[in-house]
Amino acid sequence: MQRTLVLLKPDCVQRRLMGAIIKRFEDKGLNIVAMKMMRVTPELSQQHYAEHVERHFYASLEEFITSAPVVAMAIEGLEVITVVRDMLGATSGLKAASGTIRGDFSSSKQMNLVHASDSEASATRELDLYFREEELCGYDPVATAFVRACDE
Ligand code: CMP
Image (cartoon, rainbow, N blue to C red; front, side, top):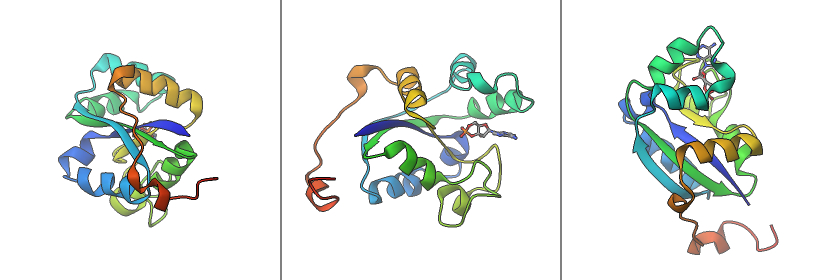
């Protein structure tokens, strides 16, 4: 079982797409174990996107990610890091396949609606940036018996 950090970015909040996108994760059978609306500060943006701080698009990315609230979620499931990344599609909404979240709702590289951790190391680091341990509310969904076999 893995956990990953998912952020519904300011474009998702402003475009009233939060419900539609959360529904996709729930429909897939994934468990949301923490969720909060918050503002990303410039400091948090620099920590979160540390690997991009020197890139040409970083100033614009920071302006965007701090421009309106985000919704941070911790999502749990089998192979959830890969599963969620596949559900998002390619970084650019112009390149993302139809049927993926970005492919269906985004036409931009920057305003691509949702961020998700890309590895176990990133998930651990990013969950720690957005949530305290006591904010993670693990539980056993009663539907699990009808979502996957007990030996999966
Ligand atoms: P995300 O998955 O959150 O990871 C880094 C973010 O930087 C990415 O989604 C986009 O929002 C943004 N990004 C990546 N490449 C570019 C680019 N070439 N121009 C502008 N923004 C970008």
